[in-house]
Structure formats: structure tokens, C-alpha cells
Image (tube, rainbow, N blue to C red; front, side):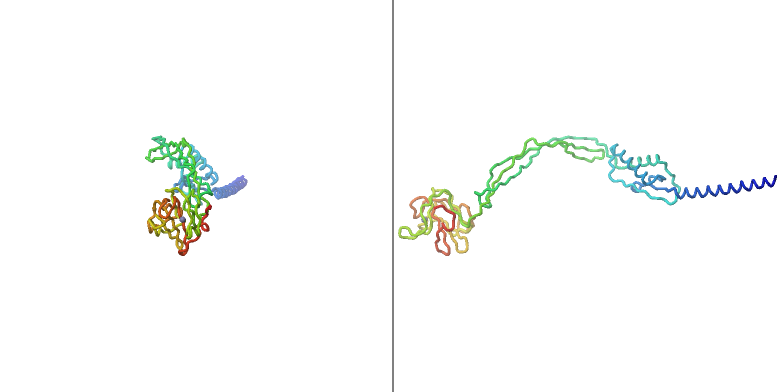
Length: 319
Ligand SMILES: [Zn+2]
């Protein structure tokens, strides 16, 4: 009886010992398997959880989306998850507790201040018109002419100005439309190459050529124009004579450098004074009938090294 009793007790004890050992091993295994994570938003500890990083991140994103939907302006919030070797004194959060804590954390930060005042204003603004350039073969390079003036457009803009509870003002364009369309300004620009020397007058009649005339040598060409016709410098240069000069009457001489001089005779007015620099095409005087002249015309002369040359070889002229 005792024998049986003793054996039975021993076996029971042995089984219990094995069961206990198994339980301890199981608990150790479970403990090794159970990882713990600390969850931070920026450097703020939210809590400790046994949820996996994937679950934590998913929960965080869901809470954040909910906060956005509520009008929160979460500018920059970084989720940080650290894996912990050993659990300290921290209480392990359940999944719903973690969710709630994340929600509260995101509430504390960056909620858009309440917009308290909104003012609207509408105003008009001029819109500069486009400029369109067209090439014009009748104008010289550097010359231009406005073909169409065009006009500026008018834009109407409505702006809402808001002042939030923190006193920060913001302006937002809520409407923007054209009340008057702009029209492009069209400018013709010259593409014709400038000649070295140009004819000093327009709308002339070629009346006398270079060479022997009435027993003397005619040292230029005569271009009949009515008195008062603008006379232009044939090329860039410096005025070396201006005013009355014998048979030339009121005249202007322009020095173009390299020994080249042009002379303009029988003028009614000499505008350009001696020493003045003039540009090709610039009006230097008005035509007339002064000096040794039998009718209103321009006497035009080109001299190279003080020798008169035939101007028709140097300018594009009809004769
Ligand atoms: Zn002449």
C-alpha cells in the first residue's frame, strides 16, 4: 500500500517537474519571440507596444489622414520606431490605446488656426500688350516704324484677405479674368543693309550729272527738290563747314574720315554746326537756291583725297 502510494507520488512529482520545465521553456521561447517597440513622434514618446512596425506605421498613417480630414495642417511629423531588447517599467499599450495616443499627439501639433476675419477686394490691373516685330525690307537695319499702336489689356482680380487667430494674414486670389483684351503693338524693323553712302534727299529729279559742263568741270550732281526739303548726311561723319561759302551758297561739308568728304550746296538752312558729329540719314539742313544756282536744287559732291569723284558710283541713285 505504502509502496504503491510512494511510487504514485514519485511519478506524479516527476510528471509535474517535466511539465514545469516544459512550461518554463515555453515561456522563455514566447518571451524571446515577443518583440517590444517604442513609438515616437519626432522626439516625443507615444508609448510602448507589441504591435509590429508595419501595424504601427499603418495605424499612424490612418490617424494622420483622419487629422488632415479634420483640418489639421501637419507640416512635418516623423514617426520613429525603435526595437527594445528588454521591457522596462513602461506599460505596454494595447492597439486601441496606441491609436488613441497617436491621435492625441497629432492633435497637439500644427492644427490650423481658426480663420476669424475675411476681407475681399476687387481691383483692376493693366496688362502690358505683346509686341510683335515684323521685318520690313524697305527700312534700313536699325530703323523701325510702329505699324499698329495696339493697347494694354485690363485684368480684374478678386483677392480674399484672411487674418487668423494668431494674427497671421494671408492673401488668396479667388478670381482673375480679363475685362478688356490686350492688342499687340506691331513694329516694323528694317532688314535692308545700309549703303556706305545714301542719297541726301528724297523725291528728287536728277537734273545734272558729274563732269564737264559749260566749259568747266561740274564736281557733283544736281538733284532738283523744292526749297525746304530735308537734306540728310550721306554717311556718319563730322561737320567741317557750315554756312555761306561762295558759289556753294549756304552749304555743309561733312568729313567721313579716310580723306572722304561730302558737300551739300545751295541750302536754305544749315542746321549742323562745325564740329558736330552726325549720323547717316540725320537731317543737317534744308535745301534751297542759294549761291551760284539757277533754281531750287541740292548740289551733292563726294571728294576722296580732295578730288571730286562721280557720286553715282557711290550711291544708289536713279539718273
Ligand atoms: Zn551742282
